[in-house]
Image 1: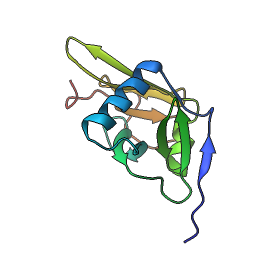
Image 2: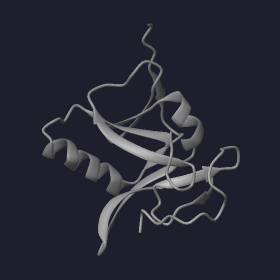
Image 3: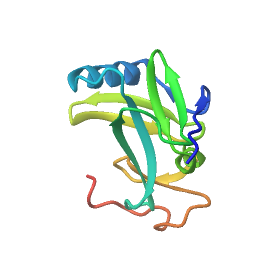
Length: 133
């Protein structure tokens, strides 16, 4: 299979806080040359859910977003759902975590990790999530 890497700079943005947290995670795991894979998969209470993992390099056809030296890898299918999204990191009394503000989501679960788009099949709009709260 031919390896094609697509460098993208303006389809997904990362806040400074998210960049700092990703850098911190890479340092803690002793993998400073890795990147963060962000993906969308079927499931969750709203039909689709976000996922993240640290990976050494992009896969064939991945979009690679680089911000302040941090690389984010997104497969083409996930990019269809994440275009225009903003990734932030929030720390609160209930715990911290990455938060994706996705303009493509027409509804989302209270936990923020599950969503539905206008063209995605999934749970009915306004579905509640008993497993995330």
